[in-house]
Length: 427
Image (cartoon, rainbow, N blue to C red; front, side, top):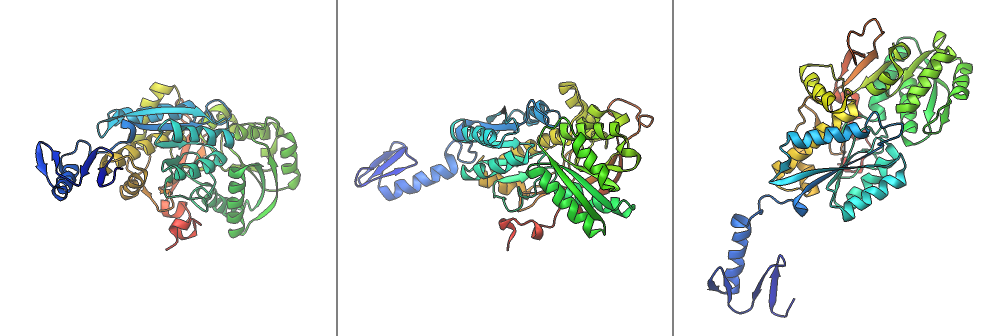
């Protein structure tokens, strides 16, 4: 800046001497007042500001591996539907959806997110469907003043010790998936457990929360074994579970791993003397296993396509686009993107801090969630559902897989805010 010269917004310069502004000669003090009024009242875009003239949303998940069916390309379809249903634009600027495959590798996911945030003007990353990826991207988004919204992410650390002001978790965590299920199972007399657990943050969190719930209900954990992500042969793990004599064999894994484990447990005859519990079930898993193998599984879910008229209507639109009924992960992406775009419209900007504040202020009401609210720790609090896989004879149409046994109110389904471990929740 030249001596004796003031630069405002990098565009208007007002020197010590008289400056022509709008065709009128004015003194510096008056010029400042006029310029301020121009910004507040008359500047194009002063009330509605979108960085880079586009709102760019990045779907980051497993596009081709063991979690692709539960999220993958279907989550991209859901995000595009949300953008289209919002009119394809917000604050007069286009909404663009991009996507990438993190291959279930944290370093790959973080590298993609870094490129998105630093070079490609992505405002919000969503999905992840892998706890290790999510925990890395969460911190990166905060550093770059962007937003990270988790879909199928089970680690309680995301909204716990790793929480940031710029994140949200839209479906579940391991506490919500396991606590009510474990308590009800122990109450039925199935009070000794053995865990087969996927060996990364998600599995560890599932097992830890389920163990705490089992013990709190008066049950016992007789042992556990951990397997690598994307395991094809579960025979050695199932033999250990069988030898334990536990009444319940609990699978603390998901996606393709859970499907393979349950199928092989049936082949081993494990179900003749022991009960199987899956701590995470997606409708895509049941579709892969088929009802004959999956029948009777009890679990907790956030969404079922056939729950009510509104969920059926949206799910049929999704089916027409994707050829499969939506999982809770895919439904959550639509819900979160719509809420994010509504928050931008309501706040008049895509600046992360303002948008997150508006997202917390506005309730979430759609086909996916009723009266949901976003807490300070980023947790979307909403009802969860007890469900059971139907028998083949109970199913009357394609994708008719679940019986909803009951509703778990949101304030019971999720950890209390005071117990979340999130530093932002400390008052």
